[in-house]
Image (cartoon, rainbow, N blue to C red; front, side, top):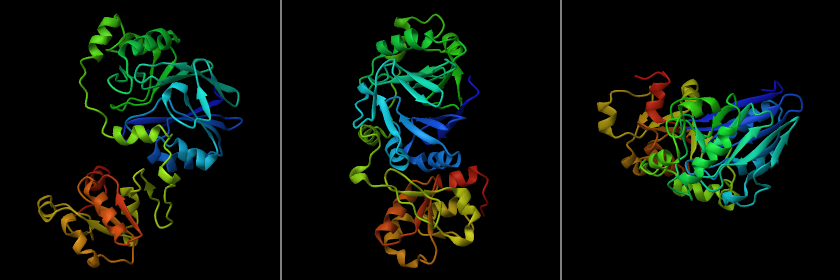
Length: 355
């Protein structure tokens, strides 16, 4: 790999998605591949800290498991949005087709159409063929599913065998997802070891594998696909709220969430509201010191018991029901409210103090 190219691999734990920030170390021109809506502030902070000039956000396809941050990034940086002509994504600044190039500094990404997971899938090859960003077409020891969004196992087989597997064996593979903590692979590895399409697997083997996977649909598909067809542009162009009382992240559904680490480090500055049921609260025998317990089913009638002199941080066992608490409190006029991301489970996982 050319030493002038810097790669930042960024991860979204909720969807097990990778985003990639590539930039030229001399010109500081950059390209962002597959940004995630809820990671926008993280990605923008990195771009600003490194003083980068972001030229483009590129979508490898219309995602079904998370909402893209492309529109937000364009609003923040004036970058262009690029994706395949066949992706169905509207209002593209750069509609892409096979063999198009996207330049940043001295470097270029070559667009290769690799349909199969969706009609509009593309892979992006660095000009020296040192790396390829394969989206959901080729994954590490796997590949994208082909059972929705115009998926075609036959098309995906030929995209991988005839396009991606014709790259040099040393070419590093960077996928859009991995669910087992693996960060990258190589074309040579996947040609030899990919259980779906590597080794001696032929088209019949591959089709038989893909047609019998019987996977559940992605949980966010009904929200993600319509949003991603607009490049993540919210209704009425509503921008995320950016309060100054805590470093919250705004989700696409306008829930403000906060990391457990920040809450633990600022205990004296916030009021923690535990909305687990009384049975849970007593049975689990674990709580955050000083937290007030009001079960979610009693919250509407007991809001007057919650102090209003500090920001309120809601939590429950997993952080799910406490998002409802966030909504209830906001509707009742509490302005400084955030949900502790991941709830008590993440709090414990990160080794933060409990009693």
